[in-house]
Length: 95
Image (cartoon, rainbow, N blue to C red):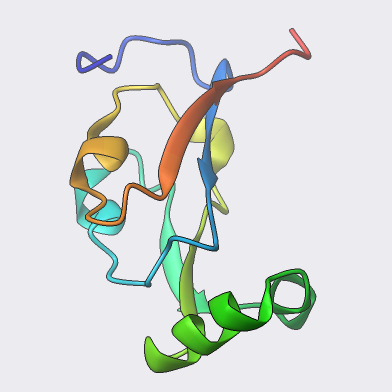
């Protein structure tokens, strides 16, 4: 998955918020500007365990989001770049 040849929208990245520390390595790694790192949404934060919320607070309450997931071409560069191994690629089933 390193040649970025998948049709956009066939795959999408999923961020495991219990692992993501908001280091933003995914942002420059993605050639399609799929990612942004920002303060976690309150609804997403609420869904996390107490220990994960503490860890998130230590890391500035920041996490990766995928506002342009529809542009993903499944090259896997974000998966490789993430030091927490918090990103996985999932095939869309609505084709």
